[in-house]
View (tube, rainbow, N blue to C red):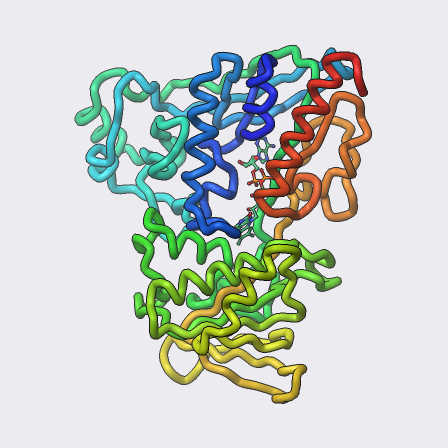
Length: 403
Ligand SMILES: Cc1cc2nc3c(=O)[nH]c(=O)nc-3n(C[C@H](O)[C@H](O)[C@H](O)COP(=O)(O)OP(=O)(O)OC[C@H]3O[C@@H](n4cnc5c(N)ncnc54)[C@H](O)[C@@H]3O)c2cc1C
């Protein structure tokens, strides 16, 4: 979004291709973001306004680039736009969706709740149109929609579109996905419901999330009053992700603040190898050291298992600063899983080079193609937006005869 608005605001035409039905990437799924702890709506609303006001930007969602060929200044792309089955001719609301019965996991909330086949991805979604998941629309729901919706509100025969466009430069900003925590067998994610991941914690704490912002445990809805944060869950580990994702320490410190702000009696413990809060972010961490309800234990968690008290969890860890082997009990555990580049699973159809983890190598080294944000390296929002502005500048230079 940043690269698009920066390029468009100096007079260039931009096509923004997003595979989800909404813009905003992973950031729009955060509760708040460090260091200022603003809700993601802050930056998002400004960018949406800049997009809406700028006729030079065309947005395609849910869409991907299925073919890309050519050279700097002269590329051709084929864009595949998937059908939403909702025409946009009428404004819909949740009174319609509530009348349907078949449900699907709500991907926006990392599967912690469900939506019906007709849904709006989230309450700040842009584009604002609803989406229909044709695969889960049952015969009875289809009949219900015909009964309750104005004729022409949905089009079940809507076809996929394939659009050919000519472009001068390409910016790849395909971002990241959370590491699959089910691969961390010793940490019991997927087996014990009260072990969740950091991205799930963002949705749990969010007002628009599955619990309306209450930090409660999935197994029984009990208030989470004693929460463990397990750092480097799979990260800096040759068997999983050998690299550091650069944001997980700050993300957990931020989430400890959610826990403490929502409940003054709540306690949090962070298990870490090193706490990596670079530059001015260190202040964020230091301010938390005076809170008696927050503990920091230096040690890599060896195992998470069920405690005798229903739903509680036992965390086994060696405290490397002197207290030896510990077995501590918690009512919720949050795994700080790292970021996997989108390029690890799905690559742009072009001859880009990737490192062994799937991050795009450097600035791509191909004239006219530039990478930005987590497609290139794990980083925070501030670095991502700086990268995006730099990529927009490079693209503009390319269109003006530069490299
Ligand atoms: C738990 C956690 C908490 C975090 N909290 C913070 C925080 O508080 N503050 C902060 O500064 N940073 C935070 N971060 C980091 C932040 O999420 C990233 O810096 C940011 O998401 C990077 O933005 P991006 O645009 O590179 O990638 P993304 O946010 O992943 O956006 C990429 C977009 O590209 C789309 N896409 C992917 N593949 C394709 C394709 N083939 N075709 C079309 N579209 C595609 C995706 O759907 C997505 O919309 C956190 C990270 C984690 C793991």
